[in-house]
Length: 462
Image (cartoon, rainbow, N blue to C red):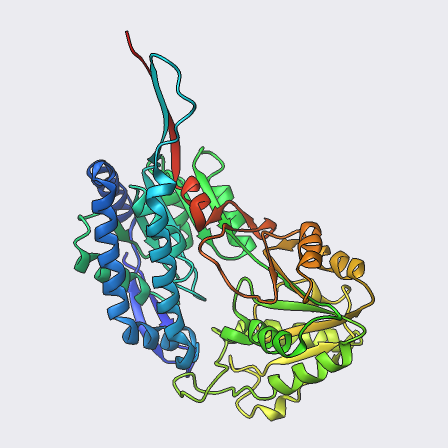
């Protein structure tokens, strides 16, 4: 029986798309095609692969306006911000393509007489990419472009919330002349996804999503030796020291907390502020937050759109309510945001103070427009609280003293440490997490290591 899944726009609840779900036989056909296409693609000269992928990036950028509008329609990001995903996609893709010759070149040990020896990086084979809805391109590009550049074939599953991203990938690769079946997309439910990734024809799985989703991937792979890269949840923290530039810190951290309605893995969800600047910081933070406009994301004036689903907004509402019952104070009046309404995905931003780590809002991933701000007395207290989490994706330290930032950064348990910025990915650096934020990495030359295996050659001359 053929099944279909509908995409419901959070803007007004209308059905904005419908996709046919694959059958079991579709999975087998797709994997067979990927395996068959892989040999020729892997043997193609690297420069030719990169040329094709560069054309694909250009084709993608040419569709930018349409892609931005589709992002807004499908998941509710303000149209004034959706275009950033297109430029971000292009920046990351082109950076990874530029790194490819160096990252994939043979490793040459010290020479010895009479022997040619080297270590070659060869493609894994078939890479399955499981992409989320919150950044359907900015997350998937981290794996798709370097996987293809390294000579792998890719099968992409996108979220049912953002199915049009699969079509755009296919269109861009088609324009670029990518050989048939080197890249494929398949719409699957959870059961079929588990079936696919546990298949012996799959050589690597890249997953971005929830901790629960990461466990499901691990379980599906438990009877195989298939490798995986998992980017999971976050409860990212910031520490504002007494010497911080408060203007820069406030503007950046408000954006880090509320951009994309807080629906970012590396969004700011906890802020620790030194007591010397606490009052000034909180006052300014509230002022900037009150300047946001919650509304229809298709309106250029809107700076805060709906959350992706009402149930997601209700989860954040429950965190806020529980925190207030436990003694937290809410500094934002929801009435200032007329579009805010219970029973809808439209949720006003909220700033909570008098919070502590006994509250859900300071422990659980919120993935919404709420942030808790806690006063601290020292660097030691701040780092202790930053590390008091099951997550460890990024942390930011706001200070004018780089030496202090380096020292504190050594003690912070995260995959990335920022000074004076947040909610950002630098494609030249490895993107990774610790604890329940995941394992493995994407981006940088290290990202290519996850998508290749080593093959050593020892050629003795007679």
